Length: 223
Image 1 (cartoon, rainbow, N blue to C red):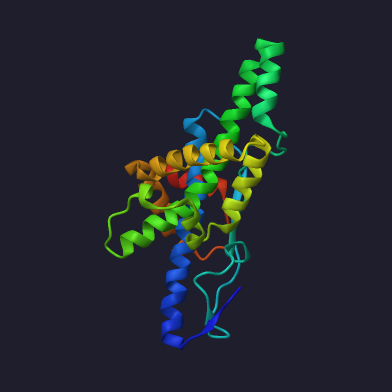
Image 2 (cartoon, helix red, strand yellow):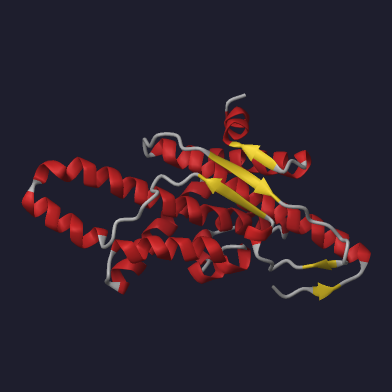
């Protein structure tokens, strides 16, 4: 993690900007786990948002730091154990017994929801960055790789871990990721979803809590 030495004043401004970026990033994940899963008729799953201290003790702040060392969502995944080569296995199972179709579909929905929820975090951060600069945000103009500029390194790594279990065909993996990226973009483009993300981000910024539970997030959504 590269850090550059900066003045106290500029350090304070960058620290506040970093806190806002992290807040929108984690709020994106958390709201997605709640609302995207609900929209896909998935059962609620436990999660919590965990934060570590950020300070100016060394007057060293980085806006490209490893977010997982500062904040992360623990839990929240619908799938705990990935099935190897889902694409191929699906075709084989259906050719043997069509009655397994509902089970396969249930797994696929959960599989896709988990990846979408991963992508919504950095997308939410990207949207807020554009809005802060008084620019209109259009997720379709953002390259998937650009999500790394918005704390998306670990999110993309985990998404690729999912996709590696989906198919051995690299093209199929990329097609699926692009498809789910569009779904993630549509999610944050929805006015109600974005209002929920903003509300949670503001709560994160002003609460200074080390842990925010899923119950707290739900109470914000349903006051």
